[in-house]
Image (cartoon, rainbow, N blue to C red; front, side, top):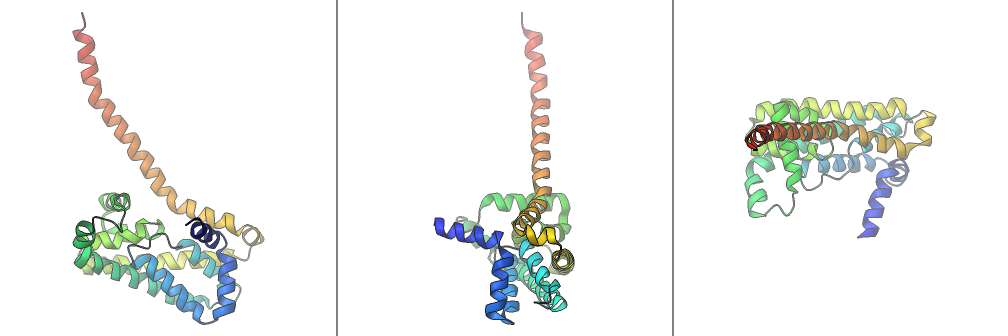
Length: 233
């Protein structure tokens, strides 16, 4: 188990090295491998821990060096992201009830679903776009949309816009900035930075909700405290 965790962490932090090895070993087949990873991360609700933002950024870096075709990468991975969300939506629509109830959530952690529901409560349909940039949530958002019976016509618009923006921004950032010495010499830190920026909105929202909850508790308790104080002999 520890070996698997160590291997995953090494893959995550050294995507540049592993992607270089992949390109050297598989050549054109690298495009298919990248397509399948992005599709699985967005389309399979049991695969939320696969690298998304960082992988797209790393792919953009190699496109900037000429090892991968930038436009081909953008079109292919945008297609993978859109197709993945589409599959996830229909899985949620037709199998969501069975997965959530009959399987006793063995495959899905409730905290991830709750976090995604909070996004929908706050942002509505735009969650499909915004969730693209938030790890974990982007895997569950289309699934929850399917369960919640969002009309497919509305969903597909957000899906296409979100997929194109996500891939375009992440791959484009790698393409434009991957050649900078500070990025090349500190790639692991850059990857961690990408993850930090991705989860920052969720952390801020979590803190805001916690503070709001505490204020509500204080407001609810204050009248009782005043009443008690007034009734003391």
